[in-house]
Length: 336
Image (tube, rainbow, N blue to C red; front, side, top):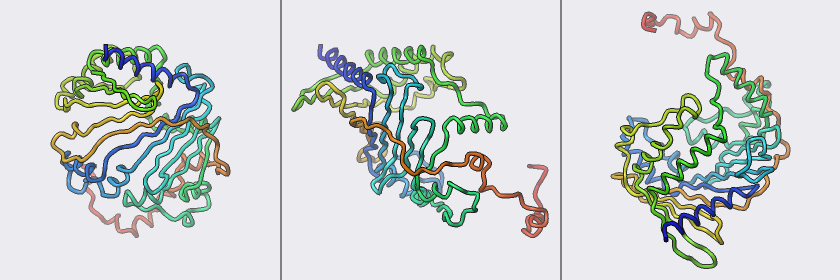
C-alpha cells in the first residue's frame, strides 16, 4: 500500500502543477569544480581538450531559472496559448545570459565578456565595431536587444533552404505526446520503487529509486514503437548502445508542501562509478510564478545585417592575397 500511496501523492503533485497558468522553477547543478574535473579526466580527453578550470567553476555554480505563463492551465495549453516565457542562466558572479519571449518579440542579453574570458577568446571592444554593426554593439555591451520572433524564424528557414539544410523538425503532436507520457508512466510503475516519509509543517518527502540502465532501457523499449510518430531524424539508442551504462540505483527525493511539489533532488554521484566525485546532483526548486515582462529600452536588431554576417567583411583582392605570402605556398591541390 505504501508504494501505491507514495506514487499517487506524486501524481497528484504533478497534476496540481498542470492546473497553474504560471510556473517558475530553478534548476541547480549540485556539484563542485573538483568533481567536474574528475569526471572529465575519467572520460580520457585528448591532450589539450580537458575541461578548463574556468568552465568547471562556471558550471559548478550555474543555475537556470525558467518562467512560463499561459492564458490557460498549462496542462491544456498549446504554443499559441503562451503569453510569455523567460529563461535566465546565472552564476555566482551574476547573470550570464537571459532571454524573454513576450508577444511578437524575443528579448536577449548576455555577459559576453564573461563568456569570452571563460572560453579564452575575448571579444572585440564595442567601440571597435563598424557603424553598420548597429545594435550588435549593445549585444557586446550586455544590453537588452530585441527582434521580431516570426521574422527571425522566417530568415532562419530561408537561410537553411538556401544552404540545403533541412528545416527544423516539426514538434510532437498532442496525440503522440500523450502516448509518450503513458509509456513513461508504465515504465515508472514497473521499475521505480516509491517510499514516503512525513515531515514538519505539512512537508512530506517521496523518494523514487530505480537502477539507471534498467530504467532507461525499459523506457526506450516502450518508446521505440512510437518512432514512426516522432519527428524525422530522431534516432534512439539501441539496447547494445546502453549495455555499458551504469546500472547503479539512482534516487530522486521529491519534497511536497501541503501536497504541492516544492523541490526535487536527484543524486547522480553513483553514476560516476570510478571517478573520484565528492558530489554530483541536480536540484529543481519550484518558485512562485512571476509574469514575464518586456524589458524597457531594448534596441531592435537589424535582422538583415545579422543574417548577412557583417563581421565577415569583403573577400580579399588578388593583390592582397599575393602580398600575404600565401600565394607562394605549394599547396597539395590534388588532395583538397
